[in-house]
Length: 99
Image 1 (cartoon, rainbow, N blue to C red):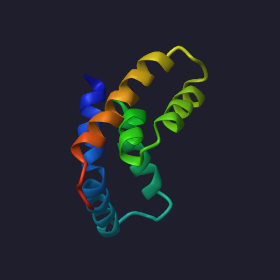
Image 2: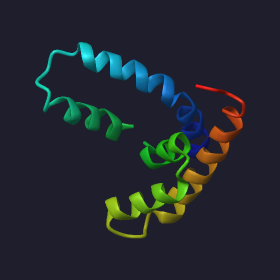
Image 3: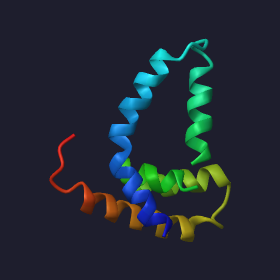
Image 4: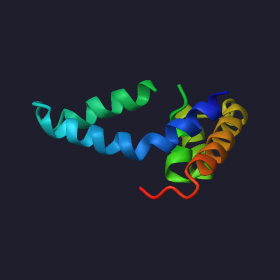
């Protein structure tokens, strides 16, 4: 289920990216705090690796990222399933779509 939701979100990432970019330009914060706020918002989201895998078309790199961030292989199998499904859903939904 996470992979399907992540694949749908990955299809929307380009649109959301530019909207968030414009919102951050209007945000009145010190420049060095903006990446911290963005990282916090991105990290709060349940399948970050799966969404990134679908959005950037890098499923293997996302799995490596999960392994590095968690410091072990315990989440590798569930992450691999979510990443694979997300990648396939995003490819199917975005087929023929030009951003």
